[in-house]
View 1 (cartoon, rainbow, N blue to C red):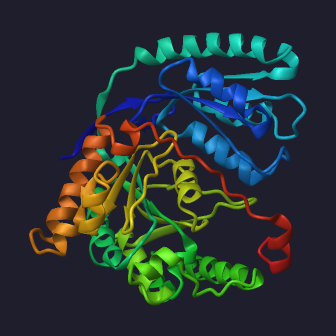
View 2: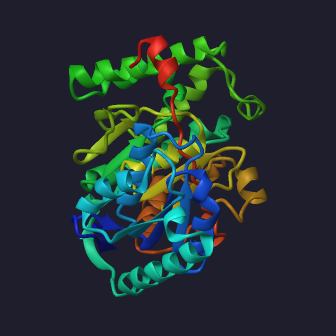
Amino acid sequence: MTEFLGYERPDGSVGVRNHLLVIAPIDCSYEPARKIADQVPGTVAVTQTHGCGADSMLVHNLVGTALNPNVAGVLIVGLGCETLTGEMLMEQIEPSGKPVHNITIQEEGGTLKTHEKGVRLLQGMAQDAAKLRREPFPLSKLTLAVECGGSDATSGLAANPAVGVAADMLIDKGGAVIFGETQEMSGTQHLLARRAISDQVAKDVYAIIEAQEARLKAMGVDSRWMSKGNIDGGLTTIEEKSLGAVRKGGTKPIQGVLFNDFDRFGSPSGPGLYIMDGTGWDVPSVTHMVAAGAQVVCFTTGAGSTTGHAIAPVIKVTGNPQTYAKMTDNMDVNAGTILDGSESLNSVGHRIFQMIVDTANGRLTKAEALGYRDYIVFRRSREAEHLLGHC
């Protein structure tokens, strides 16, 4: 298996979906943006909820979402008085060659006029996008994001290592894999650093984990903290959780750390495994990896999760047979067969890899079929980072 069927974009990237995206740069214009998007099938609206300041981290993630290969065209709907303007987003999206339009409610004369104009613009883009046909491309054009949430004792034993097998297989085909959640790497930095391809990458691994531990300390949060669900699920220490969590990234050398802060934003520069320095919160972590270019997501969970994503299909894998039995409407893969002895780790990993390719070819994940379009942008406090010496 060396190919998938995708949509080629003007910049040479390849999407596995053909979405139109409506961006509200601020939440003040989100409701009109959402109503415009609702009128045109295949369109999704997103925003951020951190105010109207022109924060570079917010700009990067909104622009990165627009540039993701799964997006065929973009409409920006602003209010008109914000500092984070549609023009700022436009100038970074236009070089991709994708169709992109910018309208503002105050200039158009209210929401009804904006709605009419926006729907007409989307209608034209939708007609053009419908002309695109899936074509065969090598798997080297795929970038996979891997994430975990609601972990329990089965996650590190079954779901995460099985996804790791699939991640290794994709890298062997020339693809790229991103894994994040820096907080959940505590206690594993020496192991991850050994896999770094250079001394600088190893230093970056240590730096991001130590910085995250300093942030938690400054907040008065024990760096060994775990959620109630993790504890109820049988995890005993943060090291145990972390050692299981990092297994979803597979076993390949780490090519680099992708920073996602004020002046450093990264995307995979080639094939292989990359670490995304970001939040441990599930949905914004996925959002940031998708903004870095991931077209498909594998999400492991022990207790269960319903999450999807606005523009990227999310394949949910559980290592807990009871969770799969209770939440079959939400779980795509039962990796619990590893624990009951009916299937090997490699067999489940191969099955997940096959599902990644099938999903890239157009098969809907369960979250997609249910219409779940989670999207949250995480923002760090520049003031707090300055006080901690991180910016």
